[in-house]
Length: 168
Image (cartoon, rainbow, N blue to C red; front, side):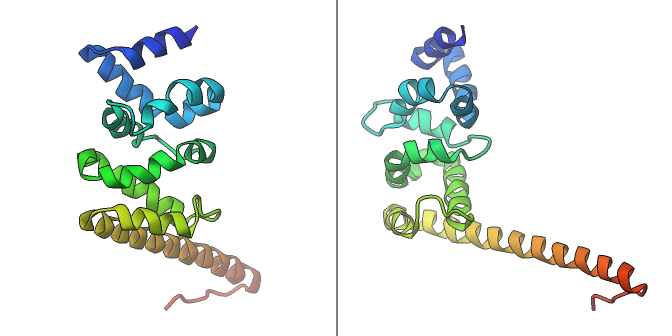
């Protein structure tokens, strides 16, 4: 029942359709979970840089609320090519950098080192700097998590041994 409405939003050219489309595209990962086939057939092709309105779709879709690995594999080539459109993304470029950094520092490593090198070669210098800063933040966050994990273990040990263990 929603497919017709969503398709009209995707095809619409008026301002209300654009606003609704932007909101719909931020939920791209969720749409993939709900109906992967429909999403891959209807929305993913619009992310191709061969489409005239690809930049509009990317500016919204890149703000997806969480990463869906099936979706990221499906849009792999277009995601890579988006690096050459980094400046066109304007403020949405920050989201592109975030996704890149999270994938590059994730456990399963998303696309892999060869692809990340390709993206970095394609990014303009300000995009490369943004990626470096974001990856640094990801590693700092990881260190903080490890420190807190270690502190929790210290608290447990202090309870086991019945004495306080000092951090410093």
